Image (cartoon, rainbow, N blue to C red; front, side):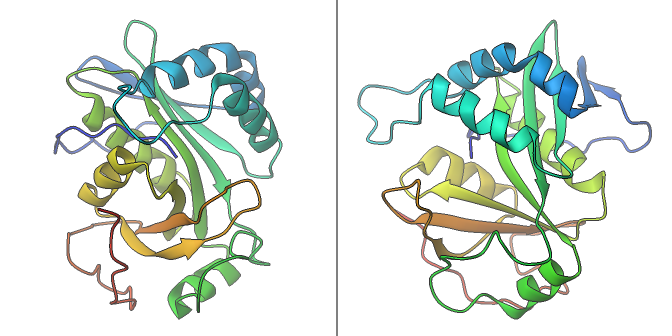
Length: 221
């Protein structure tokens, strides 16, 4: 998961599938369109993941991103929203979590009951990346992409996995109302990943209405 950490709190207008906000156009693309611009998406990934040599966390490289993107494009229900501002400014993509719960093996401890129920009823959507080209309004664009991706379907809960050492992404997601519910192990990762969820609809920094999980897992320092 990738996210830029800046500030921005404007609300996206509702209505048509595409919306121009502050000269940014948001639109959905299908899997074939996403595959056709995979090179541009990889460039976007590189720009969005620029880090200082002093930072401990080093994101996966361009080729790793392309391999993952190709695999995820093939998943049933794959969805991508892109942002354009004189070219590709950002994107967010993911897929519905299957009701058999394939997303959750490796979770450390007992999965909260609300998440289990929503998974069984096809109500969870996994966001696997939010990429934004650096810009003064990049957090605002990232948040709009996230909202458009989640509100475009039947999902009641967004879910994402973040490297525990990717502090900028963790901080940005938390500021948008995502809740940290624990850790999960994946064979491709040498360390546990943080599991974050976001109820679809109105969010606050406190527990969202209707979401019964109260305990916050400590955030990495």
